[in-house]
Image (cartoon, rainbow, N blue to C red; front, side):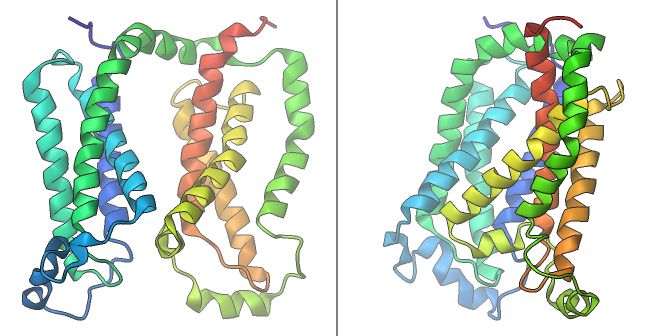
Length: 304
């Protein structure tokens, strides 16, 4: 029997719940009711009544597989404190629960503008959950063996980088900010208060609104690019000793979100640019991830 991880179950379960909320939120974007009644929409459930069940998008299938694989993986990790990773009841609970969640969201999409219900999406989501369960059986031993070690590393005072490296990090900080500003097109055109005033009415404040309008590959590329931009922030703050000992990941997330608010807000003043609230969420998560990554890697470096 695999020994459960000593990482607090509450933190893992909160992460799984937050991810499930994210799936619900993203599945129901743009959160606008469609101009049709439930009676008119029902025949289109899963595309069974209008023939759309035959339509399959490869990029959508891959995306759904990955999204629900992560959901199932997190769910199984949450269960690991109370059950053996190989017990059948928790596995069935994850598979059935994920499939029912997907079916409910496909039903809800009948009433959401610009969304459609798809049999291929439901099948891909269910198969993704099965993939996540299989992945858990593969990573559970490492989770049990390394999880508490990573937690202990993140709490060590020597998580701060050697003094020489800290000086380098602070020296390059201004150039990092300039790079982020350039990526947000700050220097492409003169700033104008008139532009900001004209842009405000057209700004969509819902995170990931623009992502759901883009193609799946383009949306994923955008998310990855933003994550790569902001992950060094959390890593640098953790290595430079700028984060508190208590809740450093939350502090890194706050720093990432704050910087992203500043950078995205600047786009209001630039012709042809619009702020993207989704980038603020990505920045927060990426900065927290960078801080966590440094905590894991740091012990391999020489002590200052």
